[in-house]
Image 1: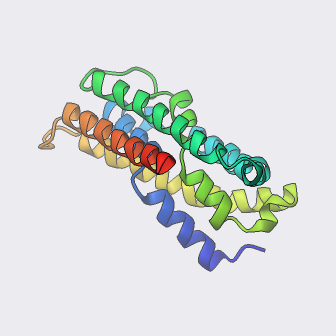
Image 2: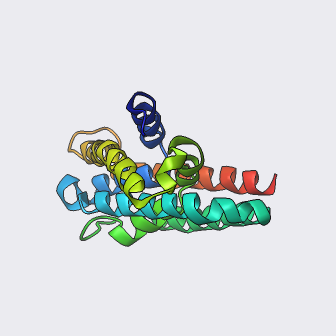
Length: 193
């Protein structure tokens, strides 16, 4: 059912690229540290699972009849990314408690991440959306790929916050905010153009 030789590298390449969720994972690693950021990994996985299931089972067929739906959703995602970017910028350098940016924020950013549409429409096999067994099998392979990549992003952020690192965490936070804003602008431009 799943061609692992094409599925795994495609998923890994897309997940490893910088994006809204990865930016939040790395930023949480900077602010809260590796261990306190670990609850963000299941939040990311749940966000992707729901978004991919939604796109694959419902929104993709509906958007064929409602061509305005995808641009409207992209604009909503872009607006949400602006809100997250503003929060990162305004709280840059301040200590955070708990797990950095919180599981709800990572879950929501992942749920709205445009990568989920790419996974549902291109990477996941069509059979994954035909039975629950096929979906869970495909999602299990997806989870096996996403967990080490998420841990890598958190670890990257955590390493950046070590004493002696030549860039201050505040600069990293504001840089992450600018990355999110860039994603927001490109997503909004794609929706309007």
